[in-house]
Length: 130
Image (cartoon, rainbow, N blue to C red; front, side, top):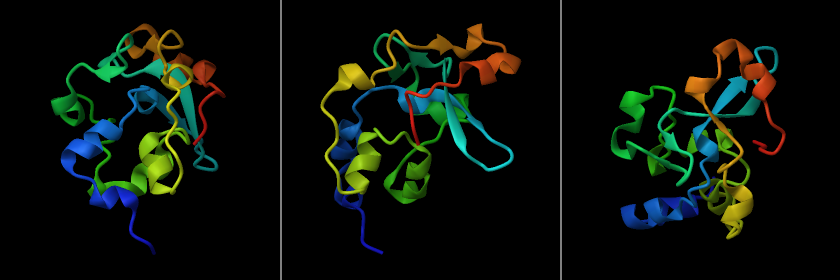
């Protein structure tokens, strides 16, 4: 298998690759029958929906155990990221999109504190694909 272009990034380049769309911070549901992942329009409570950045980025996996911390050491989770994810696109040898306005979750989402867990299936969206 070929080495990923992501493997050669410095820590600064790695962090700057994120386009800040916020899509990876959406609550995901897994189909128990086939394992397919479905994105909802419900965000992690720690996502600032105006800036589309985590309010406690440094501690994100501690405060939210469901948070997937992508790093050069665990590129296998890229398949769980949206197809529009800059990391996923670069890994696949494609151009990352520069159109953040169309990618951003800003104005399209609800905080998980406002949505009961039982209501999550009603919040599955089609505008995000894995």
